[in-house]
Image (cartoon, rainbow, N blue to C red; front, side, top):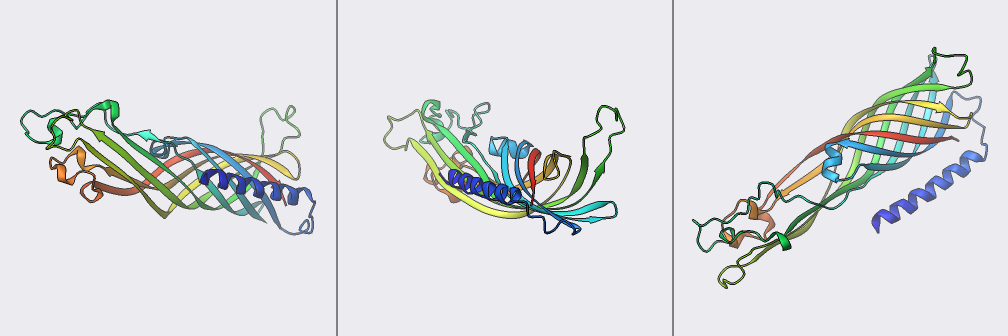
Length: 269
């Protein structure tokens, strides 16, 4: 539901920007400054794609440019949403919860029942991206007679991201030995961690001017987001009294970095 509300808010912002862009406000025509509204979508790769189990992002932004030295310096502020999906992270290939005949009266001595067990995670976030860069005309020397009307410009720069990331942990471990009443047969966790951090990055791309008011941008970007990782006590602890208690698990935080290929529609204001 939260993602739907964010999407509706973004769609309303997009409609407002398009209306303003189409209204023909040209009071700045003689000014070295220009302004644009952007709708952005992209595909991600790298660690962010792995930790989010998803490869999409979307955003809405505003850009201001100042002509200088045959090109322009630019600043852009964008709100972005980077979704995530649920995934089971239990390491079934190594299966750390195994039958141990040398351990008596231990949950880990019963073995895990994979039919009713899972370790589910979901991580996603939204936030603000600030980009500072430079752009200049990009001239195509190849086949000029076939491409006389195409107008391109290149751009590149640095970015700073601040995403609020939500990391959800839900796990259930059901053990096969359910007939021994002195042993618990269940372990589980359900909690959420949230945090945000500043993360630097960089970007570069190419813009095609469809008309004097509208354009298309294709860019490649490197960026980072806060990441939370939790290992349940069940994976390494032999004392059943510590199961189901978050403080006995292992928590780690860090930065998950990745790449994004982005396509943006721009409308001059």
